Structure formats: structure tokens, C-alpha cells
Amino acid sequence: MTVGGERRVVERRAGTDDKPIVRVSGVGTREGAEALRGETVLMAHRDLPRLPEGEYYAHELVGCRVTDGLRQLGTVSALVPLPTCEALEVGDLLIPMIGDAIRSVDVLRRRIDVDASFLG
Image 1 (spheres, rainbow, N blue to C red):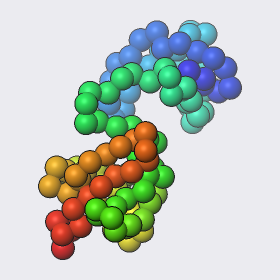
Image 2 (cartoon, rainbow, N blue to C red):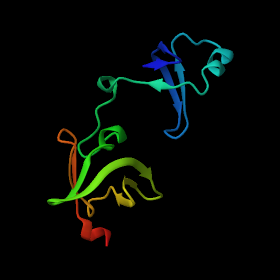
Image 3 (cartoon, rainbow, N blue to C red):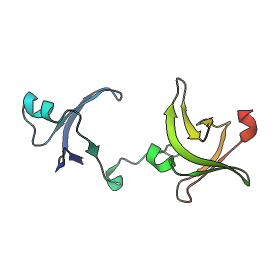
């Protein structure tokens, strides 16, 4: 991964998923860590951990076409965290990422098929 424009390796991870605490190579002091606060962390797609079947990274879904069968509904512009699940933002629609609403996700074809009747 790259942090602050330099290639680094995560040496230790603690904290929570929402507030992780990491030690990265080349940073041995609190001052060095503070200097990286707010810096962008970049990771190559090939270096991301493989997800279980049926789970997706947000960047894989953004830009996918959303359809209800043959009817085009739009394109995913963002993944929105909700209290009980995440939702696809498609125009003015929020489509929950739950089995009743999502029929299929094909990341390679950049297509998500949904059941619009579930949305009302």
C-alpha cells in the first residue's frame, strides 16, 4: 500500500473496523505517525483481501448498471451505509443490499439486477 506517497507495509493492526489503529513500516515514533494523519491510503486492487462469496467492495459496485429484468433503472453512484444494511444509491433511489431487493450482482459485466417491486 501507499501512505503519504510512500510504499509501506502494515506491521500491526489493532482497534476496530470503524477505527483501526495500524503500525506501518518506516514509522517508529508518535510524531512520525501524527505526520501521516489525514494522508490518503491507497492499495492496489490485486492486494485487497479476497471477500467471501456474495460480498463486494464498494468500488466494485459503483458504476454498475442497475436493471429490473430488461428495464434500466440507472447506475450506482455510491454505496450508502444505513443503520441495518448498506444501500445502492441509484439516482433518487436507495436500494438496500438485501436478498429480497437484489436478484444478482455481476461485477465482471458491471450489472446488478434488482426487484423494483420490493422498493414499492
